[in-house]
Length: 282
Image (cartoon, rainbow, N blue to C red):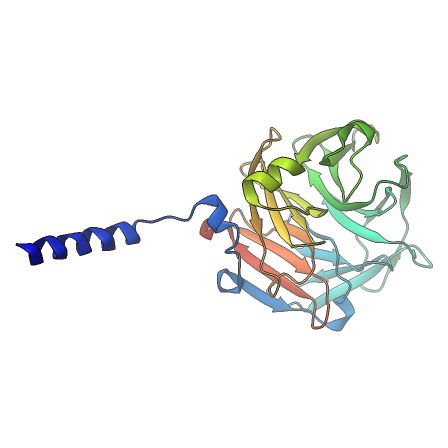
């Protein structure tokens, strides 16, 4: 009888183990290379920053300082073509990129926005410049297009605005009237992020909107690389610490499909990479 009881307890223990699911706090540490596909990029893309896709699914990226736009193959990392913004180039600290219909946009860290159209291979294209009026305290890195509101979303890396201390701020710029909304679209509460997910340093470097749910996905490169998910109403839903070996310096983020997230990493000691994550595995 004793042996039967012991055997029964072992069976229950095995069943319990097999049914155990990761809690959010356990899952956030589990975004490692075994859940991703890594594509190495050519050295021309060592300073890769923003990512964006066209309506027909082509992937574009840009470097950090020269205003050169690259059309790349997401499967191989091969450069398909490149073109330059400005006749003599633009020597600025470019961070994020977005594509809205036929228009391409770059944002510099000092809050200047550049609008232009796609060029042919090696072409030099003209541009429009918008001074958004932000002070030097702001440092913008993330940029994406919101098709529902026909606006651009801009993520401030550090300063959220005087009355929003303790948060990271996401601002919006209307493409209807080319005006900035001076109030943040939503805030990322740093205290809540630390308490719930043990992420103490968060400095947004990229932002994208899920094509179906409308949720926002924001990455941070500085400190411990991490990924935060915010609902379309502005609620903090989840956060993940990213594996440092896989995500050496995450700068760009984009969706290839509803379940495939693509993150670009600048080169550090090794090569720049594209990392594909399947959201259904998170």
